[in-house]
Amino acid sequence: MIKISTVTLLTIILIAIPIDIIAQDEHSEDEEQSFIEYRLASWGNWIFRSFLQDETDDATTWGLEFASYLGVGSFEIKNILYFEVAEYPRSIPGQPIGNPSPDEEVAESGIGDIITGFWISKRGEHHEGHHIAPGIGLQIPTASDESLGSGKWSIGPSFDYEYESGDLFAGAIAMQLWSFAGASDRKDVNMLLVKPFLYYEFVDNWSLVYVPYGISVYWNKPSGENVYIPLGGGVQRSFILGSIGLNVSAQFFNNVVRPSKGTVNDLRFLIELAF
Image (tube, rainbow, N blue to C red; front, side, top):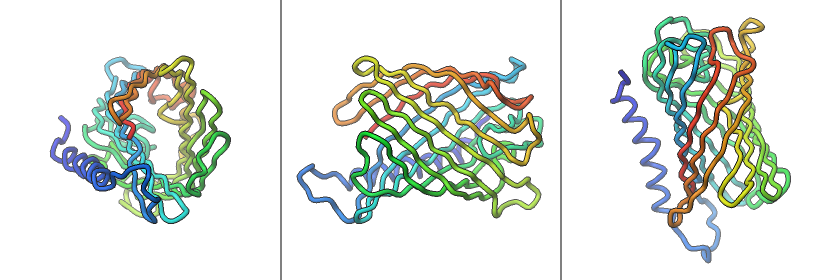
């Protein structure tokens, strides 16, 4: 069973604090821009089913993703924080992200490592066209069980690229992570993670989407066992609930390149609040 006490505590911290900040930061459009300004942009709930080669090994995961912006003077820092609550029948190479070489045959259920990134750019640069922001990526060893995380603190360079033109919004976030501290008996992390995204609104409030788990490369694993490349996609419906946006999507992916004991297919659902 999932370790509810740990999950509940972390969820309260990561959800209650940003919502409290939003409540304190309400302001009208007529107010002057503050020197320091925080905004939670979205709260995404990813619910997905992972299908492995043996149907008895199918796994269920709930991913929580928070995107926020911190304005400081003329600059803006974008942050995305992501972690998972997983229930796996066994260890799965590369899933959750950050555990490239699990040693245990049986996986516990609980929370995984936090993956987060920070990207800096000038305020007001988010217009139609190309936008790129440099930053850093971090992996924090918050997993409730060894099979669900790396046991390592990791850091590395990152960038956020976005392109917008008419009904098309696409881009990718990439980060290269190396471990620098953590459990001495755990394997080092040397991982490239690329998370592409594509939204194309083909009719009002309906979009074709490609937002996979991510393309990942584990440089310290043998060739043929170190890469995930997912192909697929789905459709998204957008709603307006007062001043809050609601996005609901369903996608299906096949990992055309994957480890021999890795995930074959993923069925992913998203419920996202956009503020």
